[in-house]
Length: 452
Image (cartoon, rainbow, N blue to C red):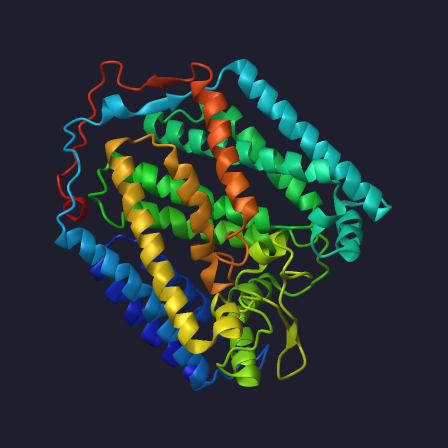
């Protein structure tokens, strides 16, 4: 069966990428390839459920797309190696570490603002729903009023939500930074309050998208921060990978268990439910390729690929969500098609390859640049920006968001808000301190980026 050949080739591709990056597990091409490997494995669980019968054409699309992205990434790694990229040699990185301690007043103001935004959002959800019996009834009614819940909120609330999100993500960065470097969880727990409120607000908004973004964001921050404590020398730390596997397992159970809270009335068992998202994207891509082929189908340039940007410019209207499709046995498969579908729809097969190759170049360059900054400045706040915008790469095996959702005015606003919240909570007030305090940190960095 083609699906098993797909798994085999993806395993080979992941092994090649893993060694090509010298065991850099979270490197873009490794994450990208591993995502599709996981999706293909989940898809095997749906063979009987969806009557999966993957075509060789879809196999070719997925493998060539993964190769295109990997080649772009590999070229950047080669460039760093060939140019002998140097960075400052640090015998003791301890004095460079910072502990972020926003003043009690600033922290309280941020938490109060987040709480007020959450209450305003929930009040409007209840108002739109017209009911308040159980959370499931409220969120189901809210979902029925509109697929994109933000359209049902007043303009001023949506703007408050953006500031709220910036506070939550910046404070999450502070939390991870402080806990990894100080090992003090209790003393930093208050920094998690904005993120916890963001999860509550998202649940009432009948969405788990923010939960997914938070999960991948925090793991990316942990990977860089924890890796820095070992000078990035301990590639693919077994301990870190073990935590990743356990965290993913717990997250998937939570994702399935929260379905009723966000108004989903699906009664499938957890494994089928999770597989429908993680593996159903492969089946949906196959259904699209069978129906529409590999030629461009869009009526305007970048109709799906640049939806958010063109929506800002008034070029296109409607919903960013793709059409729903049904499997061969009549079951609803869904509307998440992996990252390849939008590129195929707008630019055809060659356009899809070119986009993936370019994204491989861009994100790998940004990834290696971020590692360099973190190596020379362990508490570099630029990690906030990278971790947030890296999420679409990790989610590529499910759906495309890099260009269709993140390449827009809203992302620029979020970028500026991240910087503003960081400035207000640190530089505007004395809110950082060195962690050195006479303690010797034995970790050392090598002089070459790829030879730590």
